[in-house]
Image (cartoon, rainbow, N blue to C red; front, side, top):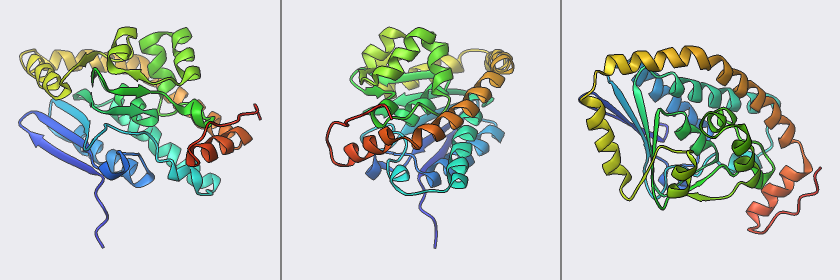
Length: 258
């Protein structure tokens, strides 16, 4: 039996386009999808493409990690395996030799937003809903979100974005510096950015990217490791179990700090 494909990968001239393809689940990221994303990124990394666009099929970019993964009892080994895959996806995306663009439409939340922030340039629709909403189920952000938010916003503002877990519009996310562009038509903005990059000496741009990667990748690796440890602790709390139950029952959680 052929396994379901949750990722589409296409090449057009100097461009690779990776499309998240689980629209019926709002491109929620489960273990199989994350593994397929990693496989596709590894392929692009070795290709002659100069640019990579990351986008989602259907109504949204990505709703984040699949909530179903959190409702199934899992062993410590399975949790470690999932977190390792997440870390590998983020590190691979962050260190791509290609210049990368995330195109957010509809919404980008949780791990989906972390993945977008790992790209060199983030474009969102002005009305897109953007949220680092782990706090709603008593978890901490993962996928390197602590690193990316600190780099873009500074530690103080990053903490409050994480703690509040509020939903921002694309326009609001641009205003505070979380993303790079907010525009009515994200697809059109992506094409404009690619045309701009095609007119530039891309080898020099790639060299600058690699210089910064060499300076920062060790910090991102450390953050991913610490996030894994912290997430393991949070998944074992009463508040997390209450958060998941409240989500499934479509009610406000009653957290107790335990």
